[in-house]
Length: 245
Image 1: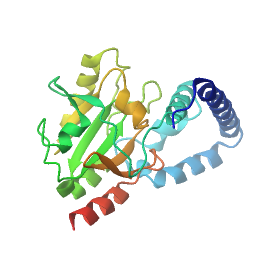
Image 2: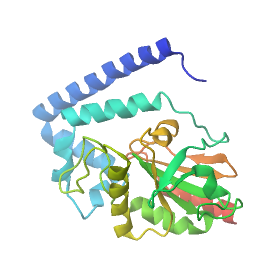
Image 3: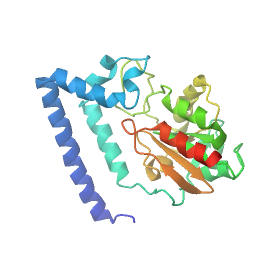
Image 4: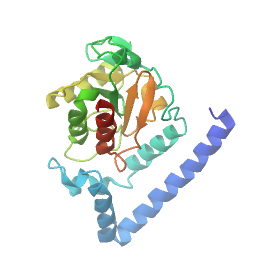
C-alpha cells in the first residue's frame, strides 16, 4: 500500500535520524578503535566476496565508510526502500528502459519475445544496479550467477571506492548509456539496458545499490535482498535450476 505523503515524510525523518546516528557512531568507533572496525567490515565483506576482489584491496574501500558521501548515499538507499512496490508472487512493474542503441522498451518486452528477448516461457533474472539492469534467461543460470560476482563499475552517484571505474553523476540519458557501455567490456552474454532519467525501475524495484530478481510471465518469482551485504547469486541459481528442471 502506498504511504500517504505525511506518513512518508515522517518515515523519512526517522530514517534520517537513524542514518545520521549510524554514521556518527561509525566515525567515532573508527577513530577510537580502527583495527576492530576494520575487522568487522572485512567480516561482512567476506559474505559477498568483496574482500576477495583482486581489482582493489580493502584500503581502497574501508576508508570511504562513514564519509559524507557514504552518509548521503546510505540515506538515499534507505529512503528509496520506503517506496518499494515489489513482492514475491506479485506483478513485476513494467517499467520503461532504454537499450544501448537508444531504443525505448519495457521490462515485460523481454518476457514476451520482443526487443531481442526470449519467449514468454523463459524466466528472467534482473540484476539492478543504480540506473542499469541486466537480464538473463533461465538457461543462463550459471552465467547469471557468475556475472553477479564479476567486479562491475561503481554507479554509486557520490560514494565510490578508490581504484575503481570512475563514473560521474548522470546528467542526461547519453551519460547513462556511455556508462552502461563499460559493461560490454566484460562481454556479458545477456541484454543490457538502462533506466530512464526518471529512475522509475530503480525506485519501484528498490534497486539501490544492487538487487536480484527472477521474473516470469509478468510476475516476481524471486526478490533478493539489497546488496552488497545481502547479495546472494547462489539463491538465484537455485531458483533458476528448479525452474529449469
